[in-house]
Image (cartoon, rainbow, N blue to C red; front, side, top):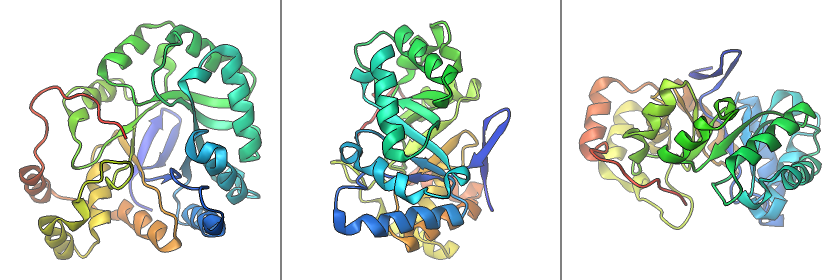
Length: 283
């Protein structure tokens, strides 16, 4: 199967999952996207990450269709807007997501980014959803080092199960403070856009001559090299989006790729790790 990550004391998950950003936006791609997600499950990529924001709920609907008859094989993650982070709004947002996803519970529910609602209230909202059986675990997304420190200081904040942030070879800022801090607490990092291809800031990693040469020597694709690099850290899971069966299979094969110290040193020369604190990258 390849590399796993200890997500909690009682939970081990594959170190690569499936992202769904930009899914559900085009009707003509719907069946292809559903087939890709189902193929991912067959390949062992059981973590599926989505959000109420993606295609205004459309991505959740695609996931819901893909999981019909397969819900028990998936570890399902969704995210809610910051303005839905109060007790009543969180319940309503969660219920809307569950309806679109055609399920009665989420394995993980994330605050998409920090907003104006006090963290104390959001923690209470998540605890209520857990008590009601609507979510198994809760976490955050796009939280930087200082925001995580604030969360951990709140009563109940230590129950946060994950932080989902942008992380790829051209965006290594979290390695300076956020990644070590989460590692000390054994809090998993879920790396979105691990191939640096989504959002406005597209990095040309796929066309890097040096990375292409290294991938060729290893007999893998550049995408597999980039994924193997992201999950080299025992605390990091990658959630690339793949909207075709061939891409899903390529991503899954990266679970079995191991980069040795020589490769990692070469990569560090090309894309140096941070030497000082960086603002958290987002897309």
